[in-house]
Amino acid sequence: MSMRIAIVDYGMANLRSVQKAFEHVGHRADIISRPEEIERADKIVLPGVGAFQDAVATLREKELAGPIVRHIESGKPFLGICLGLQMLFDVGNEDGEHRGLGVFRGKCVRFDVDETLGLKVPHMGWNQLDIQRAAPIFNGLPPGSGVYFVHGYYVVPEDPSLIATTTDYGRPFVSSIWRDNVFATQFHPEKSQKAGLQILSNFAGI
Image (cartoon, rainbow, N blue to C red; front, side, top):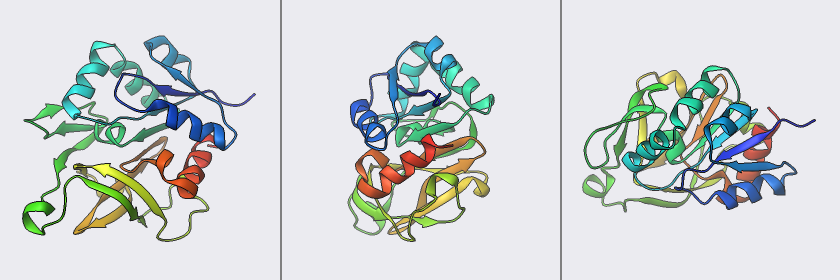
């Protein structure tokens, strides 16, 4: 029997595209929205787009924050995507300072490359991964693989050993993290074609 993959629905992501990407690589992924469903899942995927503050508040209102953190603490595989990466940290600095889930120490900050280097924010489109640590979700990916980004903020972990990949946008930023059972990407694997499908397939196989 295959491990049960669950995609957490809290109203702030295009869940169907993530679900379809898993299906494309031969893995069923159920969309769930209740705390007890998180507790029953073998693996969870936390996607997200939009504002840090709204997302964390919604997770707490729907009583999903606690079960997500407990899932991580139990050692079960977890994949965060975009906002699902950012919310793992202590603090988000979007429209003030807001408390995240606090799984890892660090903060989520806005790109300043528009003011300092004349680059557009949000950072949108294809960019390359520079692998710092060979996380299992990157198995089989060629060096410099291109992935798809849409974000104006990025994470700054206090512990640099969390960093799995960086990506250059004017200067390097953290584009994914890995610690034990926790994988999280700033980019969108479900929009990243062949490389993204490889990443989701690798996660499903963990």
